[in-house]
Length: 124
Image (cartoon, rainbow, N blue to C red):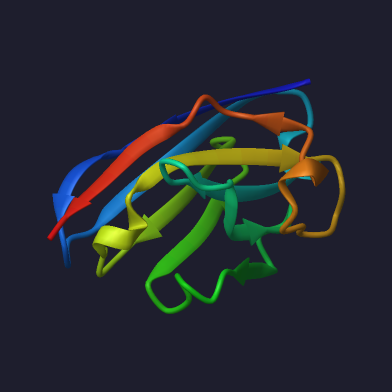
């Protein structure tokens, strides 16, 4: 069992940066693949970024590639999402998720555990 708690969201202006954190508790955090997803109002939840258990492999949605960076610190059982050059279309509730598999997945239904989400709002 893994419990996930996101933090770091807020209201920023276009072009600003934010860093989201996802603190995990429970056993064997380092054996879980982690992902960040987001859901804008009235839209489906979409994949943003994923990272393998070791941190050696990352994968990004095309919409955030080059602007967002996912990382993890297994000693602190925390996953991060650094977001630069934010755009109004990045506005959404951001969720972290974990799956007990070595492969990064982009389908949210392939993740076993979810946090409660943190709101990110980017004004123009």
